[in-house]
Image (cartoon, rainbow, N blue to C red; front, side):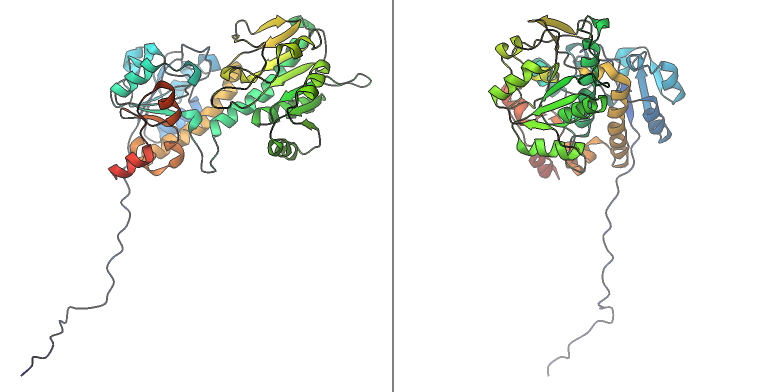
Amino acid sequence: MSKKPYISPSFSYVPLEEALEVIPKRKQLFIGIPKETSFQENRVALTPEAVSVLVNNGHDVAVEHCAGEGSFYFDSDYSEAGARIMYDRAELFKAAILIKSAPISEEEVSLLQPGQVVISPIHLPYLKVQILEQLMQKKIIAIAFESIKDDAGTFPIVRSMSEIAGSSAILTAAKYLSNIHNGKGILLGGISGVPPVRVLIIGAGVVGEFAARTAFGLGASVKIFDNSIYRLMRLQNNIGRRCFTSVLEPVTLADELAMADVAVGALKPVNGITPVVVNEEMVKNMKAGSVIIDVSIDRGGCFETSRLTSHENPIFKKYDVIHYCVPNIASSVSRTASRAISNVLMPILLQCADMGGMESLIQAKAGIRNGVYIYKGLVTNAPIAKRFQLKYTDLDLLLAAQA
């Protein structure tokens, strides 16, 4: 006799509970802001307003004595915002997260603690392999803030600094055209009955766009050169007016340079180096007393006659043409630049705390991951690894393997 099938009364088609995402425990951060001592750096990476937000969210922020003075932010401003003012540099460098506005120096790398997070810029032409090796030995997580991407896929800090550099380039040129700085006494811009100053801009990126906006705003005549038709079209659309644009054709460029009062070099680097598009002969044929502002100088410059200058000695003359070739233009308007950097970094630090630490944030955010060039002893930036002949590790694959 066959048995009847047994049906358990406990059997049911009730669905199982949904497995909810486990939210990481919020982490309190210890953030250190050192005083910059290199690269003629006047900027500070976090303003008192940003520090106030971080402190009100329960974080510990330590600021080295006089860290913000180059941007007219004083110790009293930071202490009122809730930060601790520290006089011992070695003690400050024990912070779990260090935020810097200048690259890591050889003196600073010896003070870093194993496993620290360092957010700072890197100036690739000045980067030394000894610094990289020490960062690797100490298993530092090093993030280049100029390589951080936002949700739209753009580089917010680079864009802000480029906007500053473009506007500053024209204002600097106006200064050196005046008699006060031994210029030939020209007002940059037009007045009734006097022809406007001729401004020539090489490069139609963000720097070129903001240089053009400022020059147009002052009433100058502006001509823009670039090898990308797309960038020239985009610049005209962004500015909202028709203007003289041309591809970088040597004969036309030489003719226009000979008539220009101001020439701004704002070309993007190719493989890390800016192509030289204005040779010595072209500069020689420029008008006496005209001004060259080479914004591209930090990557070599696009004028053959350019050489590095400093904020202390910003100009030199060659063929009676004034050359301004300071690499860190944003540092000359450090308060504006500091606010721009702080506006990007402060929300990142809040996200870092909410996600339970920098490692979780790097895992979750591709834009932050893009800025990581050393991760716990491994070089995760391909151009840096290639330049210094170090082993390269793909961070995405590394994190996927750890997951």
